[in-house]
Image (cartoon, rainbow, N blue to C red; front, top):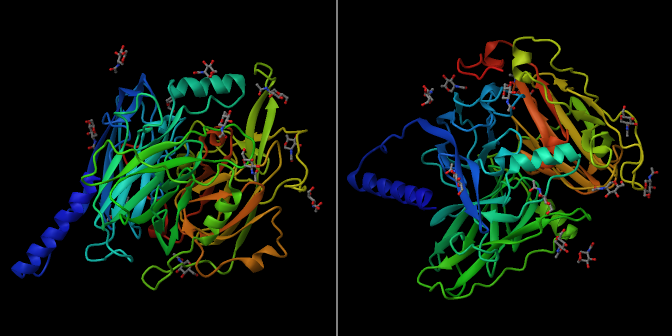
Length: 564
Ligand SMILES: *[C@@H]1O[C@H](CO)[C@@H](O)[C@H](O)[C@H]1NC(C)=O
Ligand SMILES: *[C@@H]1O[C@H](CO)[C@@H](O)[C@H](O)[C@H]1NC(C)=O
Ligand SMILES: *[C@@H]1O[C@H](CO)[C@@H](O)[C@H](O)[C@H]1NC(C)=O
Ligand SMILES: *[C@@H]1O[C@H](CO)[C@@H](O)[C@H](O)[C@H]1NC(C)=O
Ligand SMILES: *[C@@H]1O[C@H](CO)[C@@H](O)[C@H](O)[C@H]1NC(C)=O
Ligand SMILES: *[C@@H]1O[C@H](CO)[C@@H](O)[C@H](O)[C@H]1NC(C)=O
Ligand SMILES: *[C@@H]1O[C@H](CO)[C@@H](O)[C@H](O)[C@H]1NC(C)=O
Ligand SMILES: *[C@@H]1O[C@H](CO)[C@@H](O)[C@H](O)[C@H]1NC(C)=O
Ligand SMILES: *[C@@H]1O[C@H](CO)[C@@H](O)[C@H](O)[C@H]1NC(C)=O
Ligand SMILES: *[C@@H]1O[C@H](CO)[C@@H](O)[C@H](O)[C@H]1NC(C)=O
Ligand SMILES: *[C@@H]1O[C@H](CO)[C@@H](O)[C@H](O)[C@H]1NC(C)=O
């Protein structure tokens, strides 16, 4: 918070000076923001356990990327660790520039030990909070950080200017080595052990042992308003977040402004970001900020509460903070209502350009399953699929194969509909849980409009799944419980001010409809942002064809693109 807050103050100070001195223009800011990311292993201690973790520049969580809308950002990633690495700039659209998107084996091969790759991209038409994270195996458990994009110079926020701002990164901590856990899970064919704690800015807070030193505190002044940039960087848990005694006003989600929504708690899925305004309007004291999992089916999860402190200036640390009332872990009603209330701001300056006509309709069902595995503990390996296909990772990046016309890497016959329709959310289905395997993707015509309905199913179990699409924002035009009804449900769509985002939850036993215009050529990953399910194959990609002429086509790859 010191960083961004003082930056804000400095800027305001400069504006004041320029005004007083009668300067016509402000000191111009660098249009290129450069960062060096050294991937290093460092010992980190939490919950009375020390272990080596993969970090960026020795920091956990990693450094914040600051940029302004319109900037070019150059991040040189040098890998000093023993693991393959790649980094995704989650939510950045990367127009024609999938080479800088980051998912391993989708848009690039990994940066191998001892090598470097400079991610080079422009921040165009976006402002707000996004984040970055490792996009290979489960390394994002510790390799993640915030991206803060300030609006263009002279463009204020479309809400009251906060006194200061702070990043709040929610995460998960394991006492054991995460890569070892994943390997063990794969050998057994079962989910790896759940996390040992949730964290706020890398710290679990005082409800955990040995956490006195590992508690994040945000100092506030009474009467002032703060902008919290909240990011869910957890691997597998949708989270509630609340501050004791204080309401929050949501003003932005996934770097898109929304109509102000005042609430006691927010729900945030892995991959999502939420900006809230909080006014320090209570009696000076110490108040807990707290986060805990939302899970509305009987699947075991890490249900422990991480806390941090919203601390009024001058109040001694001996004051015991109060806990906020978080929604119950299984509060489906809160979750559905909260999401229903989110609406795009949709003002002339920031319009919601919802596609009204649809060129291509896609209907993908989400399934969990089990495939035979003689060496696994139960003789089966848990798996996950879209339209009954568990995605198999290729050995050459899909974007490379697409750009250079390398055949045999992927097929473009991903079905637009489930192969065998059934009652998706009827009686639980526990027999014939097999899935088909393949590296299959959908080809999408340039600039066509796409509607995708994601339907949860009762295969093995219903469950809520946060889906993330790379290279695009989309509009969440509709959602519901039960089976999507193509005859009735579209009439209920919100085509005026639906939330625009890059990650959306498909509710437990329900469906979500999204729309986007495929105007960004390239290969774009789409996957469940629960790392457990991504690893089980709950993913695919869209190959969006080039448009007319070179200015609507994928850019040539950079020279330092990591080879396979
Ligand atoms: C981490 O700590 C362990 C045991 O305390 C030690 O053996 C190891 O050298 C340390 N590793 C690093 C990278 O500091
Ligand atoms: C990235 O860093 C490495 C290691 O310091 C250096 O060799 C390389 O030239 C840098 N690349 C760029 C584009 O700055
Ligand atoms: C970024 O913008 C500059 C200036 O318009 C352009 O020359 C460059 O090609 C762009 N880079 C990418 C990766 O799109
Ligand atoms: C997972 O948890 C079980 C039970 O607590 C433990 O025996 C096992 O060692 C753990 N696995 C790893 C890789 O830490
Ligand atoms: C939290 O999870 C543990 C392990 O799955 C379970 O035993 C416990 O009952 C759960 N607690 C609550 C309050 O749900
Ligand atoms: C939520 O969990 C509580 C405590 O385990 C339980 O009593 C209640 O019935 C559950 N509510 C729903 C709607 O499942
Ligand atoms: C193995 O499969 C059985 C039957 O589906 C299930 O009841 C059991 O929980 C599984 N074992 C483990 C360790 O998951
Ligand atoms: C699907 O299953 C549900 C629950 O069993 C049932 O209420 C519904 O009528 C079924 N729908 C169809 C089309 O069979
Ligand atoms: C999925 O594919 C597998 C393998 O081809 C098949 O056995 C299974 O019946 C299919 N399941 C569904 C729900 O279509
Ligand atoms: C994409 O389609 C929109 C709507 O028809 C149109 O305004 C725009 O010019 C098209 N873009 C390109 C590059 O063809
Ligand atoms: C690292 O990436 C390279 C290139 O894709 C691959 O050949 C190698 O097997 C990977 N190493 C590990 C440990 O996964």
